Length: 297
Image (cartoon, rainbow, N blue to C red):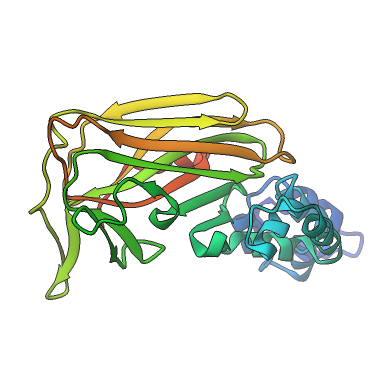
């Protein structure tokens, strides 16, 4: 950054230093940077540090409905209760916007910890993860078919593991005030049961079967009439796969949107098994494009 500072002389003959730049000019530069870059620039001088703490810089990085998001983070719900929203809107106006941004970047839990949302530190978009415990899974209460097993590879520390079943159906929904933008939805799944042996990650493929006979169908719909679907055969055992179901667009950040999603294979001519269902992820499209669909742990 120092290389762009002019070497012009003052009337007294001294060079212009970073600290001599007006804080308002520095703020204009910071507005064009992403949040991690702003934090790095704050280390350059006292002037940069002051500008990097200004509400004007950080309010430009926050989603328009940041008060509603703050209400959701505080209440542990979708943030749609008007009383809580009003209280959080007042709080959002009284605390520094940098602090608001930092709070929203944390893992904010909803619905008893079965859902989490946070701001992407780099771009400011809202991401959400929905635990397998928040999903409606056919046969989940029968341990002959499904079990919840501990996993240190899941952000929720638990995944749903399918041993064998004829009718495979996993459904879920979420209602939330997402900021305006385009979002992508993924199912995070794993063929085989991962575990550690002598400190090394391995997986048990004993129950894997049936996924190469008929494809699994993925579905997505929203309360404002958007629909998406896809299908595929499940392959690549031993790998966490983020399967892209589809995208949806949010046009009004002050109105909650209801998103329903499903993963089904209900051809009862054969059984299928050996599958871990970790979670459902919703993230801004710009961020989804940066991530690979295969995650080798």
